Length: 492
Image (cartoon, rainbow, N blue to C red):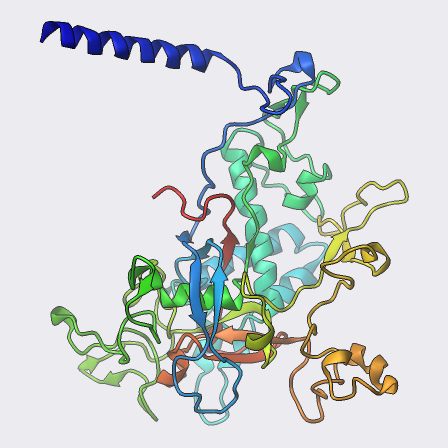
């Protein structure tokens, strides 16, 4: 027995010695044998990296395959959500809709940074509070109070159109990445940022923004200056905040991660919960509504003394029960903008992996020497659409604008054999004849989910509607998401 214990001790000591010896050796290239992170041989850097940081307000949505589209009778007979099996990559999504408080923080920053010289930037971002007006209802108090009064600070922001929502996502990207650089001791807080002298992620990576430097990273390049800025390869900066695609939103809403046995979905959902009703069957809250919607004509919240969904208009973003991903109000409260351009035939044409319609490929503007051009007056890197000449030898795309691919372009229209209609492709009248027989054009954006103003039908995750991107309503909000890089599962 003693000999056996001694043998185990000897083996463990040997393994420990190997681990210690291995840890003292620097990592080398498996293809060339050269040592990484050594300035004596060129200084090629390989940073230790474990996992993508979860950005503020986000939760991980583990991706997978699901049947996207109709799960309820198509009562409008639009035939625009035909079921189609697709795969969604893992991504991050906001736990809740963007709140009034969040948007007020954004407006404050815009006014502080751009308000003196570019007041139009602040005005452009203001939500349309007049969406609350109704010709036969008294909603004037909401116009004055809903966005700014502290009683509504945790309510979802409304009156925001699609471009405004995208601008908010871009601003949030920069503020989060700026905070990360400050937290990591690379930059100092600079409250004096104004006009083009403000932190922008693209500008920083392009070397067009310095900021108030605290400690730059050590540059191992023997031909360098000794220090350098953070690069994408360092894994410190986060990917962009953005609106979710329609497929991502619908996948996240259903929350099938809590409804599957191995690879078998045991019950296909209509809502973010099991069953076909909108009431809870839990004993403690038996019969209460699990979402904020309009039960019937003239019934927005129930009877006094027993207000069922307890919300006459919107409700605080953490109201009701989250789905199995931990997302709140993916059904009801407010409908939500997504990235996609609306086309009724998208379910038939879409790719079955990372489905999305709305690609317009861009590249950074370069000067005659091939260097990145200067920033614009707002501190952003200038971009332009990719030209056909630049894509001549490509197999995966030729033109920058692919919004109308297979559904809206000249070749997909009934006039495909009449050359005189070919020029109308740019006017968006070839397929849908916008303004004459259709309201569909390249500015028609999809929004998903039901709202406080909708009946139960629109709470079904597969339903889809659209609105011109420049318009806004009192029942339409948004939430942000972020691409997941690396492992689709993460470290739980």
